[in-house]
Length: 72
Image 1 (tube, rainbow, N blue to C red):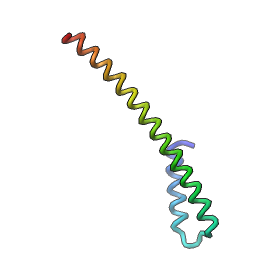
Image 2 (image 1 turned 60 degrees about the vertical axis):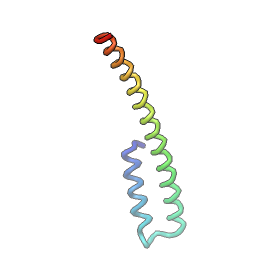
Image 3 (image 1 turned 45 degrees about the vertical axis):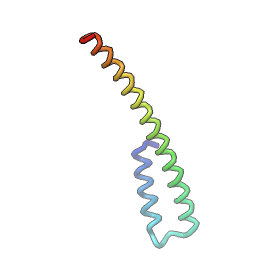
Image 4 (image 1 turned 135 degrees about the vertical axis):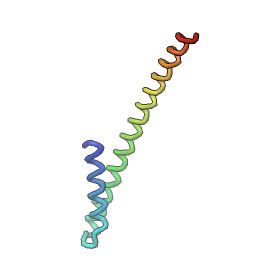
């Protein structure tokens, strides 16, 4: 499931949990699904954050090399 789809589903779960007509058992099932989605989304965000940090380090090294070539 795409991150955006997970966000949409999480919003749907939250709206369902706000309903006064939902049973206790269904509430627990939805809560569990929401927690699992949240954990998956946090992992994906952390993975992407690490990827961006690697790119920034690599680009930073390239910029340093370019600066050394120019002013070196």
